[in-house]
Amino acid sequence: MQKEIDLDLITSYTLRTGVIISLFFILAGTVLLFVRNGGMNHTLSYLSDFNNSFNSHFIPLGGIPAGLASLDGIYYITTGLWVLIFTPISVVFISIIDFLKDKNRLYVLMSIIVLFNLFFAMLVIPRIT
Amino acid sequence: MSAILYIALKFLSIMAGGIAAGTIGSLTGLGGATVLVPLLTLFYSVPIIYATGASLVSTIATSAGSASAYTREKITNVKIGIGLEIATTAGAIVGSLTAVYINNNNFSYLIYIIFGIVLLGSLIPTVQRGKFEEPVPRKADWSTKLFQLAGSYYDKRLKKKVDYEGVRWWLAEIIMFFAGVISGLLGIGSGALKVLGMDWAMNLPMKVTTTTSNFMIGITAATGSSIYWYNGYIQVFLAAATALGVLIGSFIGAKILMKITNKNIRWIFFAILSFLGVEMLLRGFQKSSLLNISTAIEVALSAVFSVIMILGLYVHTMRGEKVDAKGN
Image (cartoon, rainbow over all chains, first blue to last red):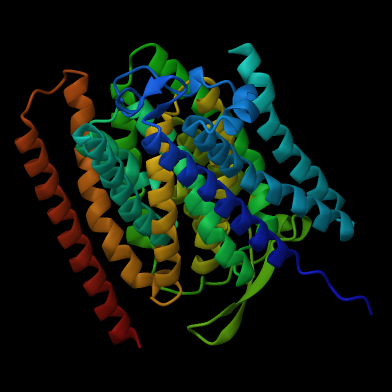
């Protein structure tokens, strides 16, 4: 008999890995912000003031690779936060594999609807609002 | 140099708040944000939309961190969780867009008021639940079979395998939509509504309910977070501090949860939540200028109210236990 792959365990590892990677980027970003006294050409005191208007609106996600390469703390934190956002989403993908394996069509369909909602929020809504 | 030191202290103090919130959130299955949003707005003077944004992101950390432990223990029912996510993710989209609308139009006091109401409301299912570790079995209905709601888990403390069968999937799905709306609107995981959906509507055991809710919170919050991000409601410095804090807190909470009974959990968060709930409500009225009282009176009123609520619950529970003892 083929050995059963434990998807609960894979899910558990995926969640943990996602959290650890995100933790790493957020920590690194925070350290960089303090060491370099700011990021994205803003000073740390500006970035840490909640009454300033600096927020995610001014951080283009396309700038992540260049930002990471130039050791910009803001982009490290941004990467960490987006890894965090994608962590639970990856679990839905794993579940689809599980449901496909069990030929559980109803749940394959339901997982796809969940993913549709997620990507609707990420890709469609930013373009219409 | 002293400026940097000051900012470092600010970062660490927000992180400490996150640790406290994460621990409580994980213990209760409500998600750290329920404590974090009031903490940030009331004590750190963070604008509420940044507080909800940071909390939403941190909620994913709580959820993923502790869900990692629970799925390994095979308590979480991933299948039921994903089925119900259809409604929560749809709700989260509606809720986040509503939050964006409210904030763009300067009605943010509404978020305080709704937050207060939701917080206090989430205490009601808490009062009613918890007498039994396992639910009273209900007759399986059509949705039990169609949506494959039966399952089992091994209870470490009771030292036996617990079998269960979920019912009324459709009702849970309706409740989950509203859980999603609340999550997107207030930046919380809205675990209380998720627990209500699975504990009350579907009649699942408490352990399964809280852990599955924990698992679902991450997916719901991911939906809301991306909408918050694109609308500029994530403040990166703040989100970094709370995400780290809540993450650490959630690990502490998960470690404790495996060791204590359901009953102990209720007392801890009931006390804190009732205080924060009244505070948020009063602050909302304050901001809408319907009410004009000093902060000292606001805190005093909240404290008095939460003490009354806790005493009320204590008496209620003790009476319930006496009746049980006589009955047996």
